[in-house]
Length: 538
Image (cartoon, rainbow, N blue to C red; front, side, top):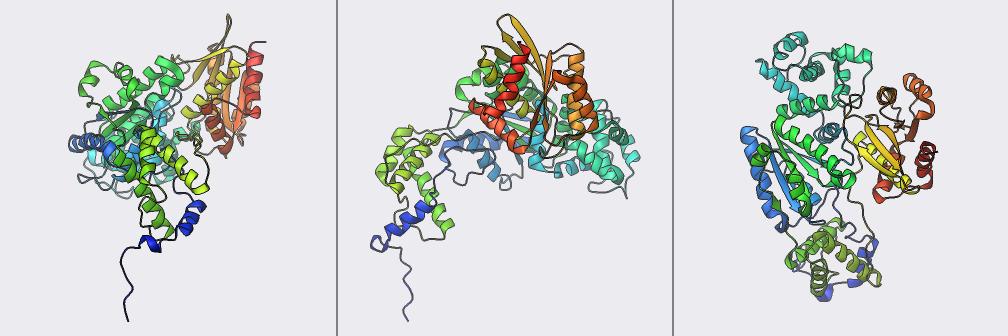
């Protein structure tokens, strides 16, 4: 018997119609925008090769001495800054010098409760192992062993030996971490505190603490301990450094950068990757003080695609597609594209990776569906994570959209007052010579399809204090649809029309963020904001 031939398929054997039908059923090129919540499967090394070297150098040095590093990465829109995160994420377990943890941090849309935004991103990515590592670090500080339980060490014994080294706000974080491991009766309560859940007064008394994680200083102290205890360097990939400036101007940008400076100055074992548009980096750099500038790494630049990079991207994309389809690849590795298509795509994109992929999608659809090339629809490039920072940003943007209808102006007041303590935003509305202030707050809840519980009460209480102190004329709170706690309802009723509830679930919360990012509100969304502004200026 003659064995089957293993020679490559020839052009004569190629069934073009069959392959085109497979492509039409599920076109391989669909997405031209990288997102921090969707892994990119194809990577072309050339444009970020220099950047990789700089980042891995910073990671390597931090592994050696625990000293934080700040590495700016610059590029114009569409040059692959978000894609770079997935490049780094892929290397977490393969970096030859050891493991690191890559954490995606989308640019906060509002400059309030920024440390909590970082904490949510870190814990979502690293999981509860980062709590365990921090406890092990604390145990070893007094000569104990990592990984041991309450059966070996007593909570009070460990606390007495550690609190001398961790005074002030840090002492509450240490108490909670120790209870997480050494106090089985309160382990679940400790876990909730570490995750940022709001606790009742009775629950905080059980833990022996006076603070909650929502407070900026407490969150910073927690981040500091978690970073110190992590067995791997933490790489915080901060996407779109220009976000706070675009939304709230220089004051918003300055507040955001102050938090970055605190992370850099107070946390060990951290590498900050600052992804920024090239054209605005000088303005951000000017916000750094002298010591930080002297220790900051030299900015590195993402490079454009070459013509060969475009060809390689298309070839790799098609190769992956045929592998997934479990079909032998065509003789032409870039089928259904031609070399002239690649020339055209490269020329139109001028080497911008995002534009190259966008034009490739347009050309692909033209080939497959026998139609003229048309522009590809815009695709969102932001990640919607319903943290208080994100939702406060959406509320402010919604107010701005509604205010435009009556020729009013809305700006965020980022000056902290005694009552706000940076937890609550104050939106300042101006119409002619009239000024009104709206206090905005959002509870720190993990699931927007459940009751806001005690977290909603704390948010409402903060707003009540601001109104009582005459620091705002009206207040607005976003709460989950199922919120029904008696303490929250009592404040809600007491404040009456001075407290406006924006009731959301997970789906409607995401929709509000997405719509305000695009600059519009659906009719049912705009009614809440339109009515409030009309009432304020009536």
